[in-house]
Image (cartoon, rainbow, N blue to C red; front, side):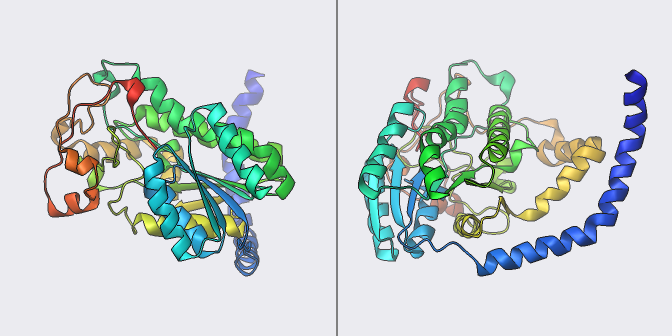
Length: 361
């Protein structure tokens, strides 16, 4: 067996590369045909029922507006019901046929069953389930002194997507519906200070890729991934979620490379309606995958040069490190984080709640 593996190690990679090169023109043609077909056969969302978790701000809020423009019936789910009220009114003005708001915690299976049952009792079916809840961190793993934050990060980033999918799946089978999940490029290309976040996203992507095979064509799955924030990551500029006391890594209101969060939300909804299995923003990040496979050392050296200038460490998030963070309540209670970042006013935060009180969408 060792001899067989040794031979395959030498034969399979170059053979596969040659086959891929020969098949590339045909694959491009097929992809172009699929794109044309999906473009002219977008799913009509008018009167369709869409459940959006984590809808009280950020990408979840913007996705709600995009579905509202298409005349969908929305079910907005988040922990902060007061925020959902304002968003529901905006969605109605934009064009949503009907908007339900439900306060629920997506890391609790019972809560997920409750908002799903309320949706079915009112509408009778579900067409799209959009999972947007996500919570990131920006500390070095070795700096952590309070490990009780670990399960909270994994609960939100993994189980907060799995539980809604689990309870909604039987109804999505009936409607030949679709699950949309908001992920990140860190699931396969992790960065320093994001170890737990990257691990949770990798688990999440593998879960949905496996589920895709299990449900076949009866339920569609769209995995949306976006790139990094660029200078905001290296410079330590992160948005604090309004009403929360923990830094969000993904649903920020600063501009991502290539455009704002509104553009990413528009791409997600458009891709879901076209039946796309993946939505990537921006798509040129895929080139890093080649470097990771064929030249991982070059990729590692590049990241070290870009993200750790002069070999110094910067811990922009103190969650789990046992160190307090200082801040203005005004920011937590309504000041736009975008305005704060743009004007250059330094961000300060109130002391963190114990891990069991960490707030998120």
